Image 1 (cartoon, rainbow, N blue to C red):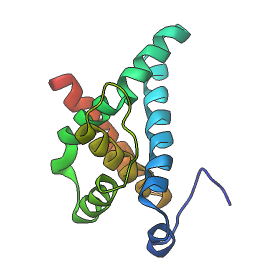
Image 2 (image 1 turned 120 degrees about the horizontal axis):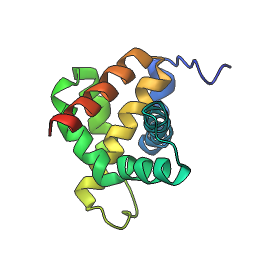
Image 3 (image 1 turned 180 degrees about the vertical axis):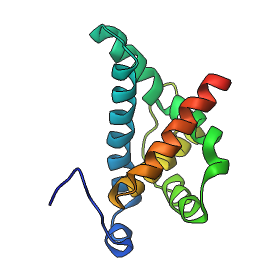
Image 4 (image 1 turned 90 degrees about the horizontal axis):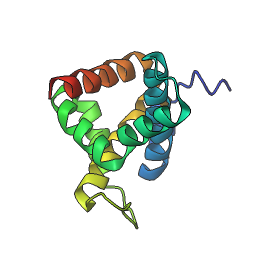
Length: 136
């Protein structure tokens, strides 16, 4: 199986836990952030790291999710809701319970889209996050 070109069925994805989707989506989101920042021309490792951490923190992901929620299709809303309802047992320092659930929902959506092979849609949503960030 080519793990860079995954295309699972709805049934296969449906068998995964909400947290498994979010776990995959967390990695996808961070890779997109890292790639964006590297292509932006950041030169130092510490600068890249600080900028990455700032963008992937639960509070930043929650804000990003809220900026693009209106763009979700019905299918994406269902996946997002599924991720938001994931049973988490701890919340990272600096994030509220609500922010962490919203961040987990965004990660679940990114995990879902990745597993469906919908990289075009991942790019659209990520571009919308970046665009909305620069506007606000």
